[in-house]
Image 1 (tube, rainbow, N blue to C red):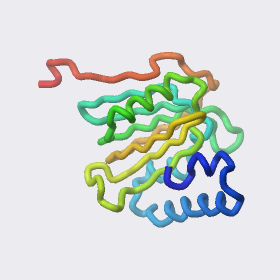
Image 2 (cartoon, rainbow, N blue to C red; image 1 turned 60 degrees about the vertical axis):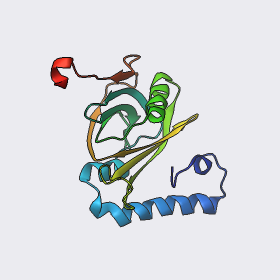
Image 3 (cartoon, rainbow, N blue to C red; image 1 turned 60 degrees about the horizontal axis):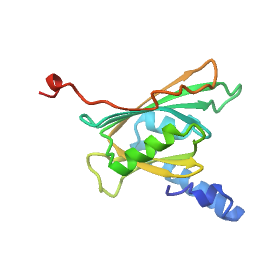
Length: 178
């Protein structure tokens, strides 16, 4: 995490430092918002992932597509439960990132504390210019570089989280692989 760090949320900072970190993050979003696609800006400003539980992860390495299904509360009253589906195209996932997601998805006590969206404006990753950072409770954090994002938010009747499949790797059939 770049702004909303574990120290930020664990009260390791004084009130002025907490507010400075929050202000710096929103100043960053304001500075890059005209370069963010609408779904990514919506994820930053209008979707609540706080205390959300990752219900399932689907990783398709052949086409670098990552799908996160998160059970979370809506931002605005009446705070109904929602399913937030985040699909990242062109996701750059290494073994450590895959293992972190697998561990978080398996542990139904884990939840998302905070998230950040960002733009790789330093040009480190021209094929994946966007960044999604996730800070989990009680441990772990993750940054995912990606090229495109789709977002679907739907109301749910309750907050129960399916137990399986919590993590799925999709491998194409030999016929499809060519």
